[in-house]
Length: 161
Length: 173
Image (tube, rainbow over all chains, first blue to last red; front, side, top):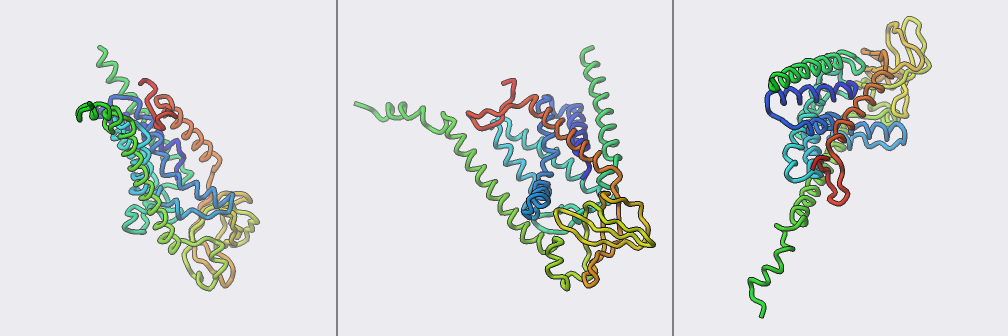
């Protein structure tokens, strides 16, 4: 996985881009998208348990790192919000999840790659473009965030005038 | 005498439409259904994934079954020996395996590495075809902690947990 800052910055960049396009107007869903971008890494609990407590539950945690599993998890989490917010919370959590899965698809395949079509198939895919310790994903995500934030600020200034 | 409409009036405050209980019970049913769906995914993944991925302890328990099988792993390299080839012990998730790479690699004791290769269980090592030495794994962890803190800050800035309602509500409500 790239570092978590890459996921959060990418989710923030996509969110700001959507705000620029007029899709979302409230800033309160930014945090939801940011948390969503870290959701698939719940699978790491399995690795920590195996490494430190010698309890091997890694394979049970795998669905959290798949598109379908993490979207179902996002849907479950959205039920811990008010009914009026549920749809938007689910959409922004899913936005974060998508950002995470897309970044992980670009990595060299530690563990064999992404289970993109789980539960239909256990085939794993990866593009093998970056290593997990590469700084390139963070450079791309943070520069994208800087660009869209600049555009957003300019748009707000223009609207004030 | 109490009429039918009076009864309805008395019951109205407790009817599902007018109470949190109505929305709440539907919400808890959905939570239960989604939890069961996720749990079934977890059990299904365990059955399917375990057939395709084996831990080092499983390999060491049945070495003949894993001869020439592809293996990928990531962990800490210890007992590094560099001659014409590079060999070390890979420690990963509380287990370890001897690794041999047919070439010289700039690697030190304690380096974090990714390896991919074929298991030579009869000789007791992993014959590595692909190796990556992580340059700065500490930076990855520190940036991850920073990312986690940023996500928590952005979320908790606008949302708080209501213990009474057992749900997250916006701070400006």
